[in-house]
Length: 394
Image 1 (tube, rainbow, N blue to C red):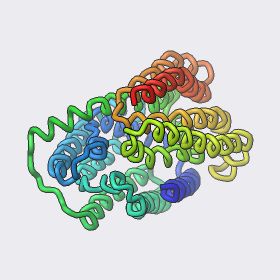
Image 2: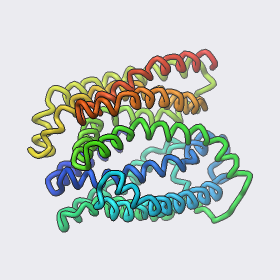
Image 3: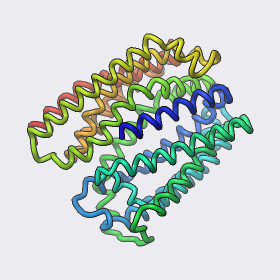
């Protein structure tokens, strides 16, 4: 998983560096509008099926057909909703050019809906070598397509084409390499079980989206697509070396915590070790990014992106705090306490929501960074409270 995150983030870094020279900040903002609505609709229709499959003690085959049917219908629903809201969203952001991007991106959830649910077996069975091969192939294909089309056309649609191509490849690989393959079989009781178990994950996903993307909506609405493009790229650059380190551990530790959740002392020691290790890794990364922001932006993105320097400094600190705090979320999932993640994220949203508009109006995109940092800080007391509760209960 470390190799997967490191390699894909390196590709992402290279992808941004190349595309930043081929496309303008405004074009990134136009694509950002489409990606915001795609992510929003994916979140509000989230069934939590993958998490439920990992948590279940039964074999994946038991829920395979049901999970595939749920995934297909969800993909169709998201695609339809994207087409439906494409024009109103483009008007909301004052960006007519984003209309075509949203329509192109509506293909992505439709295609992803057909991915073989057996793909989750890599994580459930801790077979991360195979997950690395699959994810690395898909991610590399996305980056290659996007760069190639951007080089040939200089069009913002090149970003959408990369995502569509990678979705097609993932569907193909999931059926070619993973057996058994699902059948289109509607099983009402199993669907009800998945939806019932996944409801807290749906709420957690919605709240997490609002926390992660709420600042983007405000920046795009108040300051326009060019500022949105700069802010989104700044967010990605600042999160690559910092937040992603924590995500490596969270991806691996969630199924491990689930396996040892009945051993209180082992669970507690594992969590403390993981959190300390994450801290030891992300703090140096974040500080390097904070102190050397200007030369890094000049080298990676180019002169036209220098306005991102102040906000990257703020977001580097945000990334440190968030990475360390996020280690608790994989523990909550591991012990079947999804509702704890939901409540922590809700508090973060309240902190973000109360400060985002006035700070953006006063300080621009830097204010958005401060708002995101504040939202994380105010949620920390609840994180500690739930950690104490988990260890006491177990």
